[in-house]
Image 1 (cartoon, rainbow, N blue to C red):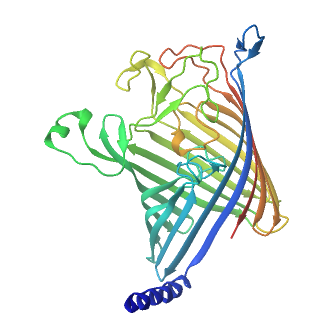
Image 2 (image 1 turned 90 degrees about the vertical axis):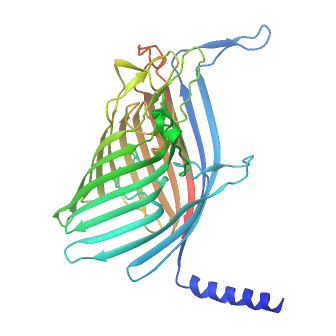
Image 3 (image 1 turned 120 degrees about the vertical axis):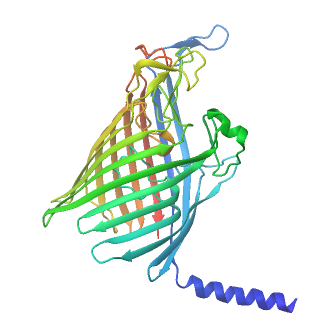
Amino acid sequence: MKKLIVLAVAAMFATSAFAGDLNWNGSTGVRYSGATYDDQLNSTTTVGAGGGAVNTSKQTMRDHAIRANLGATGGSGNVEYGTAIRTGTTANTDYVNYNNAGGLTIGLSEAWFKYSHDFGMVDVSAIFGRQKNVFVFDASQQLFDNDVNFDGFGWNFKMGSFGLNAAQYILGAHTANGTVGASNYTKTDATEALVSGTRKMSVLYGFQPYMNWKFADEISAMFALGFYNWTNYDSATNRIHGGYNSSTLNTSAATGTVPVHNPKQWQFYTAWDLPFNLGVNAEYIMNKKTQYLQSAGNTFSVQQSGNEADRNAYSVGINYGKVKKAHDWSVGYAYGSKGIASVINTFSNDKFLADNKGHTVMAKYALADNFNLGFKGLWLKEKANKDDVGVGVTTAQSQKTTYWEVTAGVAF
């Protein structure tokens, strides 16, 4: 027993000494949000015996949610490391609802280490583990959501004003046709004999060369060109009819999904810092050609030839101000358009999904140091106006989504 007590006390001292070299960070926030969906069909139904007709084409949502994260980073010499936990387990959001029946689920959001080295003219860094996305993208988060952390390997090479971001992110194991699970698999000669049964890893390979250019003391710009190859990733589907939660209100309007399997995406991104605390950014994304599925069977192996899904997305935004200390404020506006087959919804903006176009307004105010109030509003409209996937005809349905949120949060 004495030995156990001595070991426990020694462990406490050792932990305290180690913790003294760490930099702690974290945040907590609350959000109240609402949304209205209108499928434009003006559908009605009769409520109760002898009741009157009521509109079923409109739906209203209200939501209370909370988020929190806690992390620590450290390092010595050329090596840095970090780990963090957060609420929620969904890839592109860390908010969870109040009184969630499953409790406030906590997940491992970061666990990484980084090695950096200066080779004279070239600075090289490599990061391993669960990490923040190494690629740059626009404030509207069209291609990638800020909350998405990937597992794998990220690199940055920098030489003066030029640089290259690159990554090999492990998305899971491809264990059967259209099935991606955890990043482990077992194979036999029998599984490898059929294409539908082949076992392999699903991987995102990404390359993004960029350039920073300073035109004057108050004018600078970044230009980046990215290419992303989602190898063996056969499980991604985007649902038609828009809405930030892919809602389809009227059951008489057939629903469907569009496969975004093994995307190959090109990205162009530019961001400008201008005088008077102004900033401008623009992003364009183009995926490989993708067809709608045929209605019969709704299987990935059978596609409609000649019925190509929209594979393009873009966003243009402007913002004023930066929030760094008490009483700072900022406002921003962006217009975006996302084709149904342009991005993977699982990894992009969870409020602005594919098959939408529209406006985003953002505002933030620092009530005190590290204590921010925020607002975001989205006014979206369904882009493709397609009926059941595979049919490919235009219908009267054109779902409109209005979303707003107010947030308050503290960070340290």
